[in-house]
Image 1 (tube, rainbow, N blue to C red):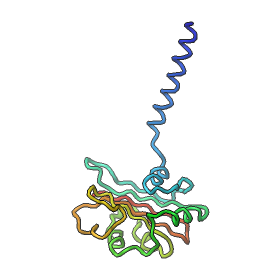
Image 2 (cartoon, rainbow, N blue to C red):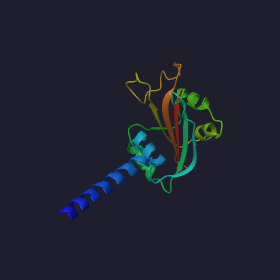
Image 3 (cartoon, helix red, strand yellow):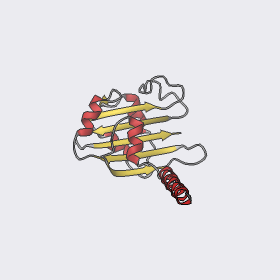
Length: 163
């Protein structure tokens, strides 16, 4: 009887330890991007990554460039209603030109894409249409996500800005 209790407790301890370790392991950047864009980018290889979020308010910028082996992501993007064909709208082009780029020249890479798609997600609290960028430049702060997919190079550029 005592041996069964010991085995039961050991099994519970192993399961709890596994759950605890899983909670401590941060999700990969591909998983974070997949969740944010509602698009599976798990097959992407990280070409460049920069993260400056931090501090008291969590302001900063995340920049990631993911490369893909084939155009499967492009077909998923074309099926996803949140993506539009390039070029960027004038508001979004102005936003990208204004991005802080201390370490990476992400602006020229994103603005240089001619053939592909983009997705804009406005994360301001009062937004009803997250994909609408019409009044995004008339604010004192920015909280948005923009992703640009280069169909010629099979590269996804992902930017999150919080000010």
